Amino acid sequence: MKTGQFIKPLQRLYKRRVDSSVLLFLAAVAAVIIANIPSVSGLYNQLLQYPIMVQIGEFNIFSHAGETMTLLDFTNDVLMVLFFLQVGLEIKQEGLVGELSTLRRAVFPVVGAIGGMIVPVLFFLLVVHEGLLVCHEAPASNGMAIPMATDIAFALAVLSLLGKRVPSSLKAFLASLAVADDIGGILVIAIFYSTHLNLMMLLWAALCLGAIYLLGRLGVRSLLVYYIGAFVVWTFFLKSGVHTTIAGVLVAFLVPARPKLSTDNMADRMRTMLRLLPESEHKTRGKNVLLPHQQIAVVHSMAQDVRGAVSPVQRMEQQITPIVHFIVLPLFAFVNAGVAFGGVSIESLVGVPLAIVLGLLLGKPLGIFLFSIVFAKLSKGGLPQGMTTTNLLALSCLGGIGFTVALFVSSLSYAQPEVAHFLNDAKIGIFTGSILSGILGYFFLKAVLKHEHHG
Image (cartoon, rainbow, N blue to C red; front, side, top):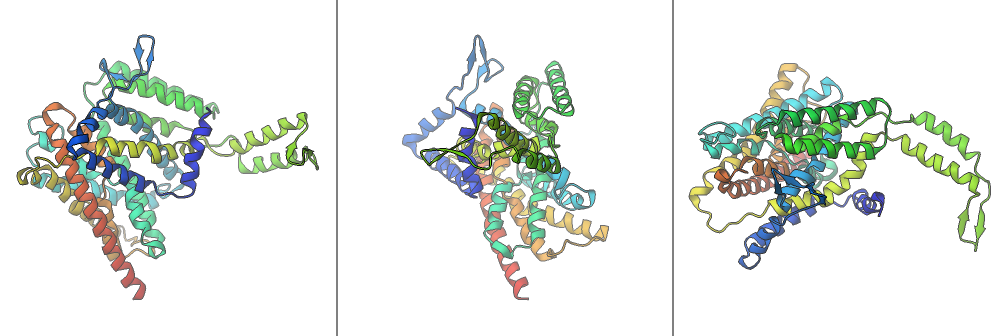
């Protein structure tokens, strides 16, 4: 079965704008329900520990430190690499032609994103303040980076519910802020969640990244080459101590953004080759259209030229986005969102869960809003057209929807056995904070936009 045959049904779903965030939400709800039904929760936990093996001789591809990966490990350390590969491709495109392509356009949402990362940490530390990130003497504070994340899929989904009343400047700001937020999250993962570094493996990974860069400079545009390169880099990162998702981001940055053919050259070649095609087709049984054999090559050349006019970075994103949205993220939500409410006490809720809720519900919007407003006043550039102080504050509330990346960071923060008991608490905080942020942001922004429209 060809890759295209597998991807095309997912691409059709994506082009029809079937909202993948709904599937993500349903997967999370299913996990929560199953995890709290005694008769099936045991099966759910067994499923998470199901071993994933691809054996080539004596070598198991999906093993780490001599241990076979479980389904949970496979999802977080392998499949999520595709998610971060897609994130990296989006960041690269935004940096080339999007809202982050010029310093003037990029600084405003980037400053807002910085505020949206710093202030939630401070709110977290108001509740859990005994130590620094990844400090085993103060394990609860390991999760201080959790409320830094914004889930762009859910945030934009909530924004889309308000329809055409939302100014384009607000949509662009939220999307750009989320991209900058992703960059911050990637840096946090790379810096704070790397353990026991293997410098030799990092050297090999760096050499592979250098080879990928050279291939791009030499004009190689085959996506298969870059997929293989991503797999090799991932293999070295798996053994290096740096989290594997960083491999996806780094490879994405190296995928060429320049197409093989410019649009003008493609159009000229198309006109030339169209003249080589017959004016009338040979038909059999009145249905099937056949070309002479010598002209089949012309059609193939046209297809190659059309393909060559799209840059590899865009083609790769187009290929993996449906897979990420309709397979990777729903599976990630299902295996990571299984919150068990049995045994939850008031004492436990006022620890890590409260810290995360405060970070998402209060820290995120205040950080985004205050940093953005102060920067707008200091730079004397003012707010973008269509953006007001009030609708910016309302929009900032949607930044507190921190589902996917927040869950991912929580799984890293509390991965060690001595802190694993905080993971369930963290999930409760993420769910509560994200849901409340979404509700508050929706109704606040709806009221503000209605007032501004009538005003």
